[in-house]
Image (cartoon, rainbow, N blue to C red; front, side, top):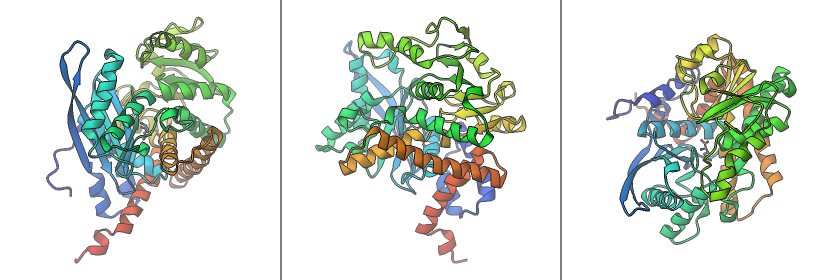
Length: 436
Ligand code: GLU
């Protein structure tokens, strides 16, 4: 057992529930269970920021390294007013599983700052981003922990953080952070990689089910970077996108929507004032669509419901209302473990986050390789390598689900945790050292 640990908080507790089936089926040493029970490092920081009006505000932030059994910690940083320590730990746990599912030489990490970034000026946002990097600089690095974008953070913010890190260590060390702007060592294809990867996982599922894109209706909750690129590419591939939503509301058009003009409308004002965030919404971006609420979108009768917003969107209270045939998780943790059971009972399959959204971290890995080698790849090369890796890993997960008669989520966890357990075994476990 882990010693002296605090009682585990609720969100992480729920995430750990997913390990139950895995531990029942995999013969893992106790060492693996113990190491997966809590984060390896959890740092809370206060970040002082001089606001434009002269006041000093201190924002709370975190960096959590869940585990480094398979390599340095890896994972994004989110800026959100509701971020908690429990949430960041949970997200870092999912990153550890995800990196293992994708076969990347990384453990899991995550960061967060409790702030509503849309209320900050561009200058305040830059000072906060640089301040966050200063606060965590001692625990990150290309061989230690490599942050990246997540909810409400983007290449501009990664660029500020990378620049701040270079100022601190007094050398260019681009591989400390991924998801940077191209001009500052970013990788081609990184911005759309999460959406691109999710579409590939969906395509693979559709192929195996003998389902045609043109006959498949899709509703997308969440129209941020990942949701938009998924919707754009899925529309191009012939899927019928019938509904979209963001934090301000949703739209429904049974005949189908083209996501590109809606995105352009949402970002129009951003171009005018050079802000980091857009001010508009999908609502109002389309003449022929009916406005719907978020709850209505989640309950639409569609073939595929894509969850690309935040955690805990489908829980035990609304899982009974979902009328989609399949859920594709692009956000991290949008379905709770209690909802998993209800959906399974109702025959609704879920393509889980740790597989469906791993395209982002795969291309982050490619960025890290390019930074370290100094050899930069063209976009076709990035997309081809992404597609090869995803095809192999997603096929392995789907095959495992069929062979073991388990859900895609359980299969992904078996695949990922199996790899973590193998790495631990190579180092030696209680089985090698036991004197009993
Ligand atoms: N934030 C993304 C995720 O949850 C990307 C992480 C990364 O690229 O390191 O997978």
